[in-house]
Length: 316
Length: 316
Image 1 (cartoon, chains in turn green, orange):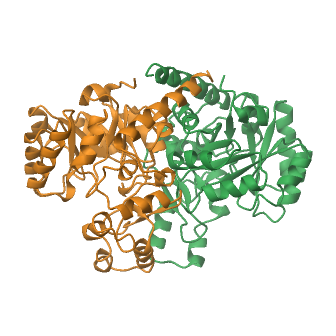
Image 2: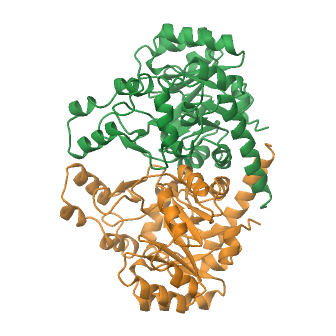
Image 3: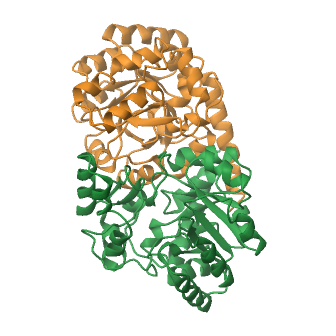
């Protein structure tokens, strides 16, 4: 069932990958997704090497299935992070925000797979040239940091699938069986879901954040940061209103950086301040109306996708 | 084959609808799409009532299949346009840029169908309340005028499908059988394609525009007009560079309007000035590498979608 090249590559049952989420994607969620047949990916962007190790100890105590880690290559200690994660048992390194040339070979030599996150065809080709095993192609509708080109999942996936020969994982706008089937229709070999898993029982997001997510509609997110850290999608709140206003008034980078960045994300994800904190979330958040376990999320995606594909088959 | 509720509603063979395109969607293209089993839609936004009538005379001389017209409700004479179009034989009125409440009943009383174009769930619900027969839901990746909320096709379609009971047609990011199958996966009952048909032999776009379209990549379009006429997607060129620069520098509406508007669209579409003119185009333009007849476009979409769905079926 839904056994694609991504399943073979990552040694997983279903081609469903947990997006690496800062402060949110911790051990319980990683273990939950992996144990249910997907690939749990630790969101290690804000973690120390010791935290990565201790999180993976918890993961291994909960499941014997493969798991991975997301390493933003802008981190100056990313090489050490990668080595520590592999030593702690990670089988897939998802790299982002940097060149895949630097560590791909080193990772693969340690019997580990590399998937690089891109947001346009140019970087998909560069990633393939660098020898990565797979590409996660992320559309403009995705939560958190986005590509500057604003290319949406619907437009991005078929263009990348045509441009490269390695497997492509679709990210952005996917939270159910409809989106999963659509991504496979576009030529993807799997999906990466972030926002859907924020609203998992096991996610480390503060309950206030989860509740805020369940309440938004299709128009509940917006982009800020175009002029500073690059486009970033989050749930609309007082903070985003403030940033949008400041950006519209031509505020300086210094002024804007006071309203942007890691601290604001901690405020929402950990401290539960959903007014002044930043809640990264994709546009598909409007469709998520219920907290579920990660196992239930994956089972529901698979069973809905089966129904969708049977309906499609009846049309031909 | 692919007989959905949209086929029954519009009395067409395939649920593929020509997006109403200013200066581009004229009689030859409308007739070509309808004759091939889709629904040709006249892009009447820039036409006089006499032009609508004469275009439809040509359409009727080329096909006996149903056809429609796109009426932007911002036009002060939209009621007269609608009545003239129905008298000339249009069977579907696609309304946009205005409230669907005003003319829906009047159109339906003349034995004609109404489809209203929306870009978020709120207006989809309002359209259903107004009694329209179908909704065209258009994502941020689409060419031309876009919704302010920037919701992408992947995120928009499943949320609208869930919110309303009438058939939904997906628009934005669709140019081939992959996109068609993906749209149906998301719950749409059909697709609307604009950009793909710009690059049809029968489209009225200037050859220079068609050639420019065939050359772009995934990153070949951009949004301008956020601060004035609303987000508008076009092929990047000297004009869009100039507008982006002016917008970044906080230019006044008056200054911006000199670079925006109908005249710029005429320059590109009719006069072939692809440097200073505006070429409306969706992000999926990067995947279009060949001019085809509208018949070939439709046949290729259908046959590729069949292959895609067979592949999906083999996974369950």
